[in-house]
Image 1: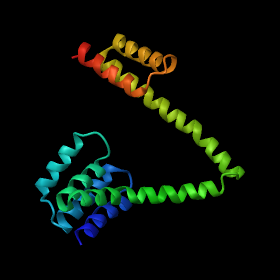
Image 2: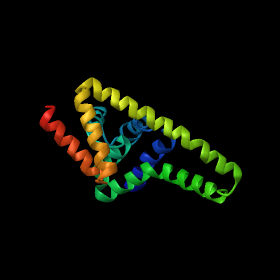
Image 3: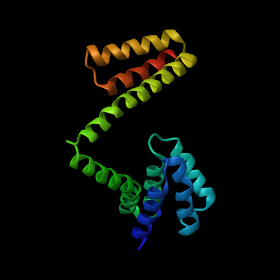
Length: 176
């Protein structure tokens, strides 16, 4: 019975939590604190604070922790699956529809219209990251890290993980 409760406690916020973590958090709290009484409000706030210190989506971190606390490893897996299941089902459904009509001129036109929009969004994000970096660490460090990263990625074909690790190391040595 606990596994079904874990599934429902995280599946419902996954369906209703439009907008990601910030909108899902109150729904998850309602389920685990008010409905099932697995955590107190104080405990939930501590789990939430701890989860926010870690990288990645907050809903999956909450699901993994609370699922493990209530049902062990299997409980954690079930809660994690319940968190991603709504998005997964919707994605599979939409992709199957898209694949069914992929040769349609309307679908081809639609996907061609999306590409420039995504390019602009990524460009704006890059400019914002550059401006933030310039404000925090200055122009010389920002230019050095940017040019070095570009060369490592494009000219020398270094894997992005190593480029990120190198930037972290540079920051730890020269910017601390």
